[in-house]
Amino acid sequence: MFERVISKIVTILIIVFLSFMVCLAFLQIILRNFFASGISWADVTVRHLVLWVGFFGAILAAVEERHITLDVFSRILPVRLKKYVQSTIYIGSAAVCAVLTHASYKFVVSERLVGTELFTGVPAWWAQVVVPATFVIMCLLFILRGIKKWLQS
Image (cartoon, rainbow, N blue to C red; front, side, top):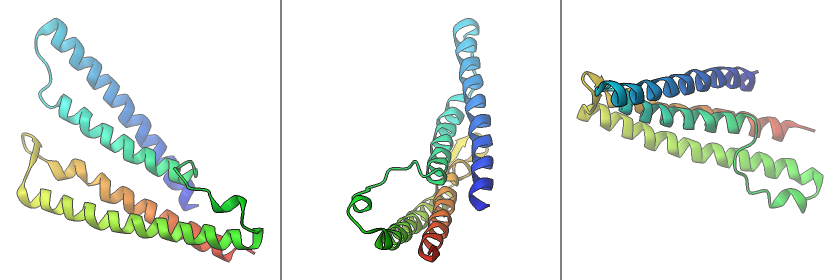
């Protein structure tokens, strides 16, 4: 259930952000080439939306189990041990995501304290909050998968 909801939300957000990015970049090109002007915040916004789309793509890859894996053990382990190894790998992945959540949270907090702005009046940390949020979601996903795999009979 959690995975389906996250997948639907993230897919919709990717579509919306990609569409907005393409339209904004196209508009910027038209304004620069034909009207010698542009939107002052467009380039920064597109750069940060690339970050958001990339992190949302990572969530989607994890939900669909299309993320990078080192699948050394699956071919050589007996079936009864495989689920415990996979469960341990999921919990290990969750631990890595937890560490990255903590580090990225500290980064966002420091950016907030410094008061960096993307452009006039828009704090940079608003655009960077996607990083710890993504790692939290992936951490929860891996914990749930690890528990589910461990409890399978």
